[in-house]
Length: 175
Image 1 (cartoon, rainbow, N blue to C red):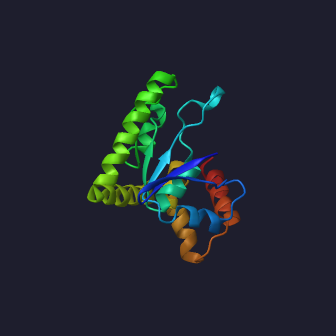
Image 2 (tube, rainbow, N blue to C red):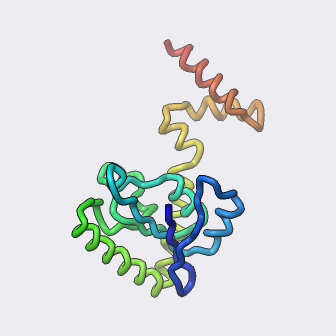
């Protein structure tokens, strides 16, 4: 897996494998990046334009402006506003080359306009915190946030087992 990130004045390939890198190594590799570039894997069933959530979480939590190849249309609503894309993912080479040209033109625009780049970094980070807050994730999973709040009022630290038990109990009451 290769990650490309823009540092001031250069494009540098990062030699970080998230499967075996420490948190400290990951943090140091991306801490000062302003723009994160996401390219999709090639070959076989991997060329479907799916976004890798782990990579996006890393980029967005470090306030990067994320620029990506186009996405599968089904995923676009999730990433709209968080990730800048040139369009819908098309796996054929001609469309991909045209998309990459648009992608790099957009990156150049961001690099030449620090205000636009700063705004991208701020807004995507804030939107990420809203969309992927624990309350929103639990809500999207169908877990009652009121139930979780009531548990947290009794105990400031909730273990995963407590959340699961409370969730299981709430399912048992509704049947």
